[in-house]
Length: 350
Image (cartoon, rainbow, N blue to C red; front, side, top):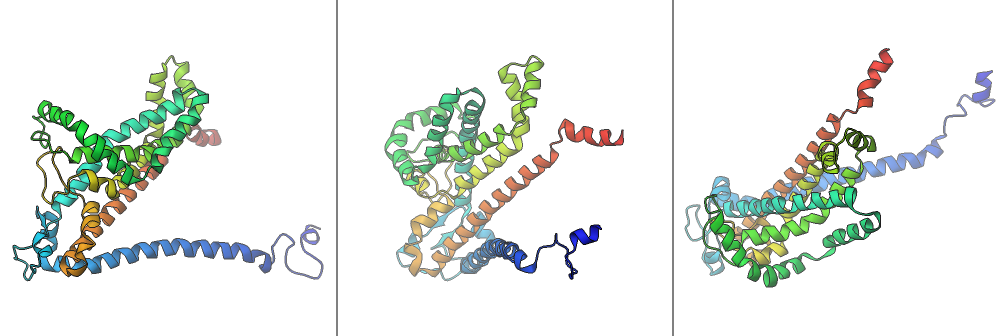
């Protein structure tokens, strides 16, 4: 009787089974999305292989080790018409060490300044802000991401650099016992570039932190308050531990944003090809050197190849940051076990 209800007369196909024609849209969607995902991976692989190929001239000329660890990026001789003929030539140097360190220093300053402010903003908007003001303030914070980077750079040139020089000198004198802090203060510097980047990464870190904090189960917060915890103790013991993986992932994405920023950093870092002795001195970054010199390097194969090599390093750094952030978030999510998850096996066993 059941067979007659589910099988049409004169046919072997079940009534619950869809015909191949009806399954066609699902298959097209499946294969189409799979092709798009594979295309993204192929595109990333193509970029990587292409950058390696374009960088081979510079690596072959001065060696990979010298490119990564030589503390000078001097192209003035090339721009005057001198030629790089041998690996020991002193007329041109493509040591990317000051560029890599400058990138990491400015991004590190951005994280140290920007992430605490972003997390504090997210906590206020999620836990403390009045309901009526929550949406307008959230929109204002998000609007920081809509400001063009060149506007941030010009603001740094005409406002921050002139007005923060005395403050930087005071910091250099107060914390002179800390390595890489003491010394004279230039106008453009790693510190100003890091401060600009901190403002630029604040919207993305704050938005991710808000979304993560909003997912904290109300039972956790109510339990903390029921045990006599104050509002701050509830945030410290219930909200922050639960949302820590997501906040860390957002901070890592902000780090990737800071590493790749170009125009704003070009305007405020000073563009010095040698490594400065203090965070208050001028420097350079990988993205800044590519933006500044690529147009002039078109007629000089070695210099152009060196810029591609700098882009390869920047590409690898950004990719590693995103991979680490993704792994950390996934590992933190898997590590969360709620009371219900722990009690379920015991209940089933009982």
